[in-house]
Each structure stands twice: as structure tokens, then as C-alpha cells.
Length: 141
Length: 161
Image (tube, rainbow over all chains, first blue to last red; front, side, top):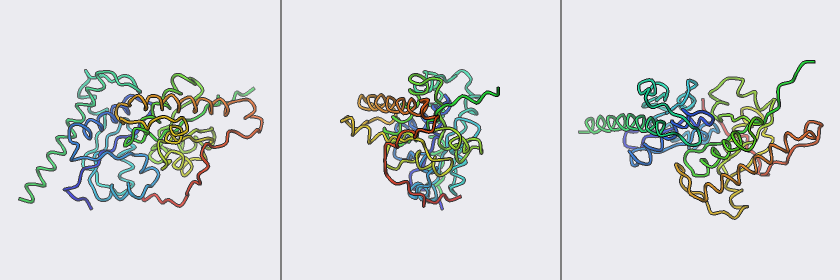
């Protein structure tokens, strides 16, 4: 059961060896640390892999935004396997196709275009969060 | 004569996004992969054990692995053991930081100076373990390195599907 008042979970994919994994992580930090810090909570995907009880509890009780760097969609799959509700499933590659000028490079340290792409993704996610909050307010009058 | 696949060590970092120590694991793994032991190591995304195919799960059954965890939850070590095979060695950043007398790392998005030092210490330790694992003696039945932590690995955790 998802409650609308709690912070929304943001789970990036943890992709370690690829640039798009780094973009997913950077986008998650941008949303959770800068754009919507009060409305979101970052959750480490590794806890879901382990089957951590607290992480499962969180995923069951709150809505989640997943951000994946490759087509394997590890974050989205693991949230689904854990019985969570996905508010928005972001595929970095899809958003990159819409912003081909922002070609990310680098893994440990993203280039400027990669950081900008992460920023674009973070803004998209913030919009989704705002829209959801607006709907909840409208419902509660 | 048939050639055997080149022996490499898989590095599984927890990548814990919530903590600065998680960022340390990720950057240390990348430093070993790209700089310290280039060509002798590969990295494996921990979530692939569950979300990927059998190939990912099979990796640790055939190749040696070193897990790099940020905190005492030891998600990488326990997750690797649960879904693939027992890691050959494991390190925990918070333990290494304490052992080296370093301040706790801070800045999960952008590490502070202590965090960068922790990356160096962790990467150096992992590189040493790679060398010990790939040393010729290890192929001749001599036991590999002892795990750096001797905490029991609980296997009673349940993953809800």
C-alpha cells in the first residue's frame, strides 16, 4: 500500500562500469539533495538485492522512482520483485535519445554533458513528483 | 592445445548510494579496474545477480571475486554469497578507515579529502588481494587470502519476490 504523504523513494541502478550508470546516480543525487530534498528519499539498490527488511518495508509502503542506466533495468526489476509501486520508471537511454547533444562520457567523473543530462533527468523526475503532490492535494481538497 | 580463458578477478562493490562509504567502494573498484590492476580485473554490478541472467550469477562460481562494502551491512559480500558464490575475499570500507586511523568519509555525491584518502586505501588493499589471488601459488592449491572480516554471514535473510 502506498501512502501519498511520505517522501518518494528514488532508486538509481548502481551501474558501476558504464557511463549511463553514473548518469543515473548523478540524477538521483540531484533530485534528492538539491531539487526536492524534503519530498524524496534515496534508497541504495544493494539493500534490495540483499533482502534487507527495512528496505523492503520502505518499498512496500512508499512510491518509487527508479532510474536505470541500461536496458537490463535492474532498479525497476528489483522494485517490482520486491512488490513495490513504481511511480515513474526512468531509462537514461530514452532521455538521452531526446537530448543527443548531451553525450555523457566518463565513469568515475562524468563530463559536463553527462552532468547536464543528469540535470535534465532530475528535472523530469521533480516534475513527476510535483504533479503527484498536486493530485494528492486536489484529492484532499 | 586448447587455451583456457584468462583468469581475472571480479570486483563487486556495494555502490551504496546512501552513504559516502558507498561512493568510496565504487570509486575504489573503478581505480583498481582502470589504473591499479588494469586487464586483470572486471567489475560486476551487484543487482545483476538478481536482475540479470544466469551468466551473471554463475560468474562467482567460476572466477574469484573480491567484494567491497561500505558498511557493516555487507550487502555485496552477503548478496554475492546468496546468489552466486562465496567471495574469495572481502573488504569493508568503514573497517579499513578505522584501521588506517582516517576520519570518516563525507560527501556521498562528491567525496571530501577523507573520502578520497579512503578510496586510495581501499583500492590499494583490493589491488594487493588481486595479486595474492592471481599469484601462481593460488593456482597450485595453496589457499587464497583469508577474508579480511571474520563476521559470520547470516543466510537466513529472505528476499520477497
